[in-house]
Image (cartoon, rainbow, N blue to C red; front, side):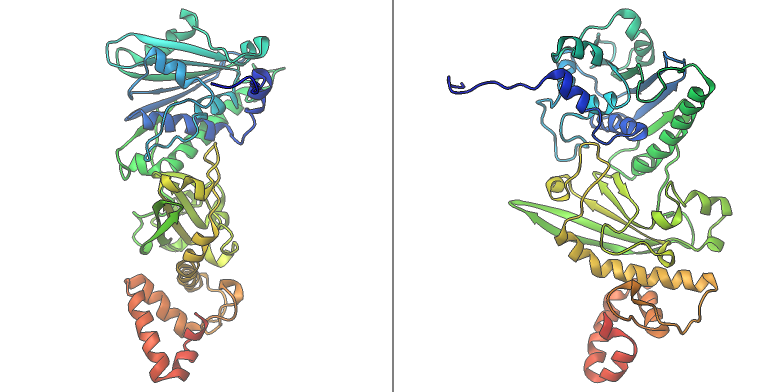
Length: 427
């Protein structure tokens, strides 16, 4: 118990709630954060309904997972809920449901049923009510406010989240106009593309379980950034690193790919599709996964810069959720920071990937002479010319890179001039 020397300094609910609306979500990432909750609840089917109706436009996210009891629902609507998270959970802070929702709307209603055929529980968190009373209040919504959500649930277990009063999405002055309708249609398309990307392993069945996600009734197909189904995609092999954070030991895994050049894709349309939301140049680099959920994509995390010649190089970087603190994942799960010790581990395999990807690019670009040496853009100093580059590329593609390194080490002893001529001294 606090003594008489202590004073409670609880924050203003009105001010803090308003400030929590601006912690980094856009519309697609806010929807994705709610789907994280559905995944943690064991859902297999998730439906996203984005329905335009002017000022009465609504967004509903419905899942068939394990629903919540009345007490569980109240706790779920607490900012910084007291629940504990398993190491495999996609959640982390107990804020996502509230902060993601209120980043887009002023009214959040949750309707949930814990077991099939049981009673439903419903609560509403309304920003205007919190501001009016300057208190952390939730209310029991009227029957009219939950009728559609209950219809979506039917008699099944699961949870429906409803967003209303989308003040961050629609213009206050003309929410009924053609511009507002087109904006909702655009957001629905962007959301579908975003979910197909960040949950692609779940949609493929490559994660712990398979998910089905629909947006406005359309089933999402996974967008896998590595195009494994393409005949000419090259996989350079999986590498694992053990990382220690205090007393915690976790695994970081790197899986490197070289995508085909344009003319070697199965179709031109497939090549364009694989360009991704940021397009080819900015989609090169690391795709960082936490619990099989993609949290960051494109760029090299400061290991190297973007380069036109490397646009076919992509790599999956997975880290265990026990390493969240090391990677400094943010509340919106849209940004991580790759720590220095991890960057050091990645430098060599990333450099090898870039060498091989550059060779593929040059083989199919028709640019430059084949006896040109690569510039220092592939690392410090001048790297090997065509012969050494071809050896490395072939070894990587054949899965024999470790054998090539042993040969190079022996060659340094028996024929150092040849070793240098092949460019191994630069590695």
